[in-house]
Length: 154
Image (tube, rainbow, N blue to C red; front, side):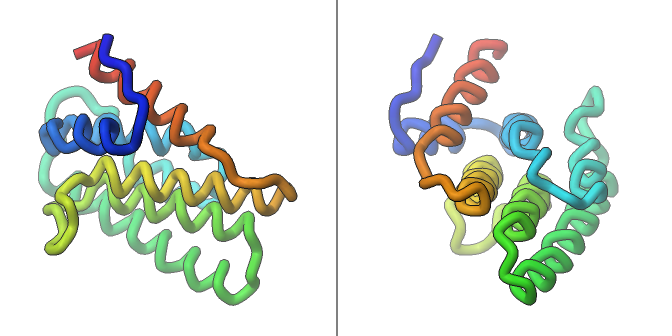
């Protein structure tokens, strides 16, 4: 089994995946942080990834639109109130929007899984701040494990 020890190795492994595989592992990252979301549309937005077979372009577009709307709505709410828990929920919504991005965005590294992972990590940081704890690398290490298991399942 491939062991991942750093973000450099993590990012390289993610970049080697197809877009469909990136969405599958991205959904696993989101699933690990979904409890930080207070918006049921976020979960629904990425359900197409779990469906058997390849999702239709319309399913991907619908998931993207729903997650993007949730991310915009949560950004407005968390920015207005300055609430760390709402911030965490916003980052989960942003992760859910990154996962079904129809095409890699110009200027990005092209990895929807990397963007998804980073947003889930930010959600965890916000939750830790809300709980009065310091940030650590627990989420990064968990994501390494999730990716290692995904690669091993091949």
